[in-house]
Image (cartoon, rainbow, N blue to C red; front, side, top):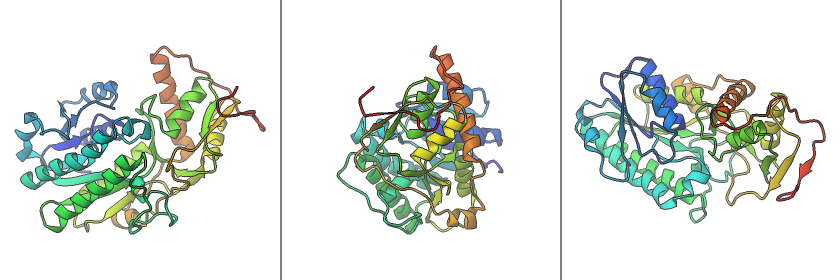
Length: 346
């Protein structure tokens, strides 16, 4: 990757994927301005980034007028990445109004900034725009099957609205736009209380707690290691002459949650017991990206095997638990026929 001629603005750059993106851009020799309200980001993510001379942090919320520290240097921006939204259901449902406004108000403010400065703009959208998919795997032309009234709608519909804004700006020639639909991503620097399945299971396993599986565990996901996701985002941003169409960024290896538990078990992290709880409302049963467009246009596909990525993630979480003074259980393997605990029971 060749560093852009001017600095890059990364909204949401202190978050999980955002902090990995900032680091990748900095290591490529770029200058990065990170805008984040720190509502869901880990403070330690910033400490790691601030070691780089080319990094600048600006505290601000994209639902509010952009800080002067951003607008004052706006003419110099060459790239604008919008990752400014919580992606974990637990976190985005905690303040659904703010989630929706972050996606709509935040996106239009950053698009206008791109229009004013001539910066190239990339929106990180989500596989959640497909809802409970009726087509499998999900290609970008699929319009989705989303509940607009359920508890996930603040995020799902917020991202769909953000895409609408981005493509309207593109159609009118107001901004050079890219849209990435990110599928389940995991890796180091997730929050301990992130609430998504990988972080939940790893933290429970390392703490010696029963694993929580929602439903019967037959629902599927496709897990992409964060370094691969970031590589896809950068390739999409830097791709020249691309049509303004969404691009799926995700791993095509589809596994059930039960299979995910077995992989974790094989790494020597899983305890013996499992607790089953009801599926959350509108939780999709199947999720797998069609990445044909990413392969053809970007020359991209994920390279990190699931077992390898999970091993690195487990190692990182173990270090985080220890640094927080929490005990870490290692070496406990799940045996065939492990005992299952009824929801709420012991």
